[in-house]
Image (cartoon, rainbow, N blue to C red):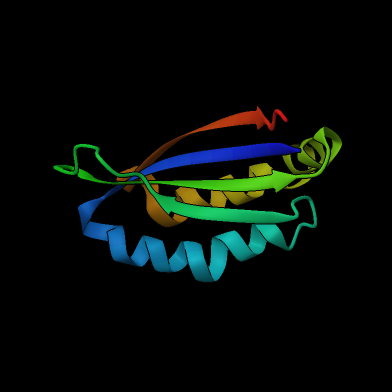
Length: 101
């Protein structure tokens, strides 16, 4: 199992709208690609919230090929949509992790 983790810091001015957008638009679009079997959307705690709030979205792929299919076919357009919608009001980084049993 592979976890595609996207950590995002949101500006206070768009925080509530961004959370709603994530829940109603962005996460459903990613899940509709068929590349992931489940997700978690969490708020990162014990961080400096002076400038905004930090969230992590974890998408679970059964295989690395499923993750790679997402990157190859869907990621660019979905990232562009996020930047067009929120611009410099969000900043994030991505990482790929493998579940170890």
